[in-house]
Length: 152
Length: 375
Image (cartoon, rainbow over all chains, first blue to last red; front, side, top):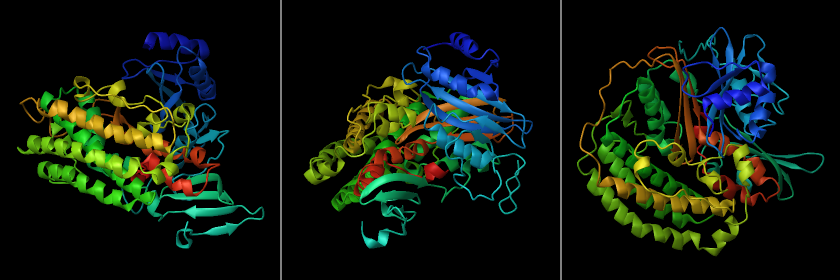
């Protein structure tokens, strides 16, 4: 089980651009969108980290940007880490798919695509999961639903 | 499969059949559709189609207060309602740095385990019924009724409790709670061996379950399969052990692990977990400390700005709640990582190459609850 200091040293070797926000509940890493796949592979295959279990993959719309959030766990060491990718392009958000690294990511990414409209490069089957094709992206903050008005 | 449950058969030029199983198929326990590609009787591949009861719980949560979010979590995995409630409560308590009274921790843990037993009982009923053993259904529901009666007496509701509130419980448990729970333990200790006599040892059942739907440990990790389904593949994924919450750090219990990874292993894990749950309740029920049933909480809960993440073990696996707060009285974003969502998508790996008749056994052994997948 590695602490924040040890994890950040390993990650900085893989991705020198990574930043580590202070005062968070879990260890968090913010990486550029083009580095996420390399970091995911590195964290899974490195023997010291062994992040083989993707707990959840989701996104948050902060109105100025869209952030894709990855929660990772290691079934061997049981340490947690949160990866974040900040996407400033709201019109055409695009990030590499991590489904080659964790099989479950394929479906979590489809959910994120369905609800946020974030597209994933090299995804094997990027189709909507819950909603119809012509529906908007409901978890975006600028989404307006004429029928069931949920403000916020 | 009989004629009427095969909804739609399309003949393709290479003689593959595409059959839609569901969305109204009895063995899917809800509105879920499997698009099954067949070659003869063998499943070539399977695609789950979901979203039939997508209610947008995550979106709705953004417009309501934290106390109200709890009531929505009941409607996800309705068979683990109490455990879902607790997950949201734990997020709020950690964010507000509220120390929950010991009494609450004990009662919550007991109720969690009662809830887990009730859920496994219903799974056992339905699994038996899926495989043609209708008697199992009556046996299971008869005993589940005892737990639901305890719930009804204490919280007035049987399925969707919403009994947890941030900081504690809605009100104290009924004075009869301890007595009736102890009665239930003695009662169920006698009845549980009947389950084994009726179904586990049945050779027809074993033939249908053993060696069917094999899932390796690596596959379980890759697909994020947790709960009894993952533990049937020797994956130690019990959050009660990894990150104990409530009173789980005060009790002795075993994490049931099986190495076979087939349908029968997943069945055995759940059967053994009912015994373990009884053990946990027994250790706590006589030692519930006196005290308040809730910590002092403000009527309007506003979480400090930040991001919070909590995990609990429901009857089906790991439920993780991820809350982003902007300091308002309703969350900025809530993500429910539901166990069934991840568990569902391993279906293709388990079913491909097997016979279509085994599909019902495999989906039954994963114990899917569809509202939890769609949210």
